[in-house]
Image (cartoon, rainbow, N blue to C red; front, side, top):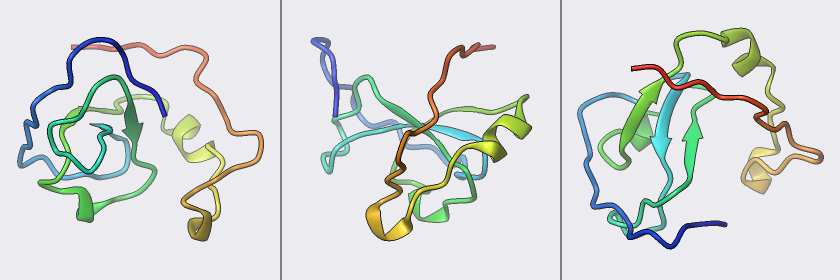
Length: 92
């Protein structure tokens, strides 16, 4: 849950596939509801292709991505004491 006081973004779906390390904009069921949340795929997620906006791709730190705790699929990935991002660097 989250959001910001800024307006939601209009969907900008691309042909970029969702693979491991892909960064995508989170949204509600409304395609034009992306705002302030994002997700990083831990594995290929073809079911997201054409449905969500790709905003980046992991280029370094694969060991960190692969070490992230995986939650119970039946509980929508819920994890006790989840990992947190302490520092993120964005490169163009």
